[in-house]
Image 1 (cartoon, rainbow, N blue to C red):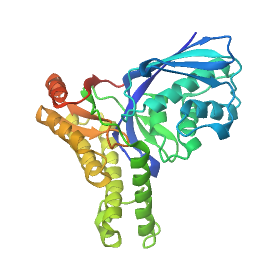
Image 2 (spheres, helix red, strand yellow; image 1 turned 90 degrees about the horizontal axis):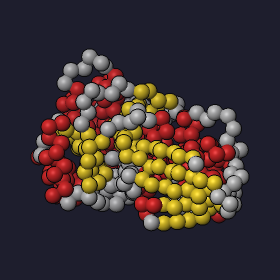
Image 3 (tube, helix red, strand yellow; image 1 turned 120 degrees about the vertical axis):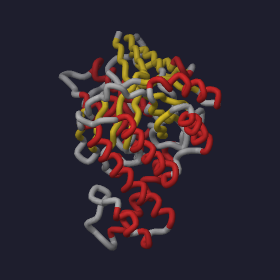
Length: 352
């Protein structure tokens, strides 16, 4: 039997940044998807998706033209076949997960990476590095379907740890873990709107940049400074200006967070992180508009109960958010969130 276990992930800083080529800070967390595969006589893959109460069969070889939108398992098979990793025998595969689905913590990316790790274990020869697995997962989940997402999910899950991820160079840097980083994951109960939110945010951010570059061609989101936000306000309509503002401001916030987390001499780390997280969430809520009213109400409940900062995770439009708090406040925050109607709330920790 082949067993694979992969974590979920949260994004601490840089939501709606990686598809612009800008850095993000993400971490793998202790919510897991487990895949167990046993050889079977049938020449196919038989999947039992335990938590969803679903089963399906998948042929060992895939005609790429027949893959339906969002069928990540079929896309993964097709992508690995391009790499010369071809399934030659059938397996019965059981998948169990404690990762909330359609909630912003990358349940689909965890599934893709787990399936790749299984296929590599069963059918590949030689050593396959974790970053190669991350790249193949990104190809299967994003590039294969022409979707607007970035590679943060795949890198943070496949490589784990607390990391800065630099999409342009496909490189990462492990950050020192704070001794105390009390985090609560909150399942709001609102289904997120992944592709719609991502598509619009990416389109509008790039359109705003293109308008600005007709005036200042050398200006990019990589080199823009806070002063450039107001400098071009009169050249952009209200909607484009919101995305221009958010893209620049959140990049600067992320760079400040990288500096803060990289410095072992930083004093009062948690309050400083909280301030940056709340700034980030401000732009996600007001400019990207990815935080529904009900989620905002839940965030206020968490803050009133002693939370220091809250931020929506992933594309937004629903799904999960996290709370940064002092350890002593965690039980009360969780209790109040559940009373408010959150589907679930629980402490999380960075893996491995």
